[in-house]
Image (cartoon, rainbow, N blue to C red):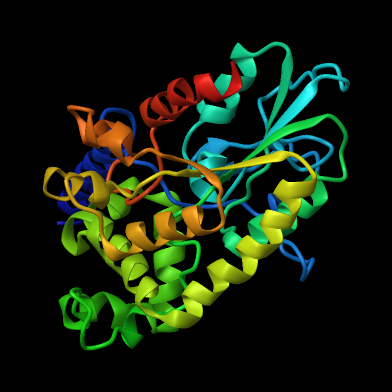
Amino acid sequence: MSRILFINLIIVSLLFVVLELSLKFILNVKPLGISDGIINSNNPHIRFNFKRVKEGKIFGVSVYTDDDGFRVVENYSPKRNELKKVFFVGGSVTFGSGVKQEFTFSGLLNSKYKSLNIYNASVMGSDLGNNYSIIKEIIKKDNIDKIFINFSFDDIQKVKIENFDKNSKFKKENFFSLNELKEINLFKNINTYLRSRSVIYVYIKGFIFNTREYYYQNALDSYSYQKNIDIIDEVFEKIKKISNNNAEVIFIKIPYYYQVLEKNCKTSDAGEMKIIEKFKEYDFKFIDFKPVFCSQENKDKIYLNFDASHLSSFGHRIVAENLYRFLD
């Protein structure tokens, strides 16, 4: 009996390994972990990366930073400092979670333009307010030409899904089980451990809970709260002063996966309309990538598998190619 159990255990273990490797390398499903020693959360005024990171992974991909904490390629060799500087500021989408720096849109642009220093000045978990804090540090440098800020759809998300009002199109009960589980400390710890190590877990969780819609709807509902809109006004007023006195500021708006589905490409949700309204109100230049993504035949290819917002290397290449005209 013990021999049979042992053989069955070996077979199950082998099947698990085969499935894990298949999902990881064939379907390109990413673990969702962040190694310690990459993000410096000790400064209460700004969230940013540690300087000179040489080890650690985010979403299973090795991460490196330079003397300023900007994300760089492995074996990074800086260009001449007197060249004009272009910065990309944002959260995890701009950082390029799950993609090597050389294949992010900032990395692709830096390789293409030899006469420009193009920096990835992004950090996982950054929001609109933190992006402004990053910009305040950037403008201390010389030879700045442009600062691109990615306004991610969840950049003002301060309201939990449990607080959805009765007018929300996305009803809390649709995902009550996921929310209740996330409030249990034991589940939180298990979830954090498994999502950072097992792509099978990421795959099953994404399939069962439809996480792409979950995160989209959660972010969308934040635009129905005036205090969140006030955050945009407060930060935009500060950024406007910088754009009037220093480098040119250009916003980019990279949509969530759910926003570029065929049924959503011909309309704009309340959050999208509010963001564009604020861009125009403060007279900011902006680039909306929703029409670009909607024109793609295979939209799944733009994003990481089962991911609501993070771009694949293909998605980053699309963004880079559409930014050429702003840098030429």
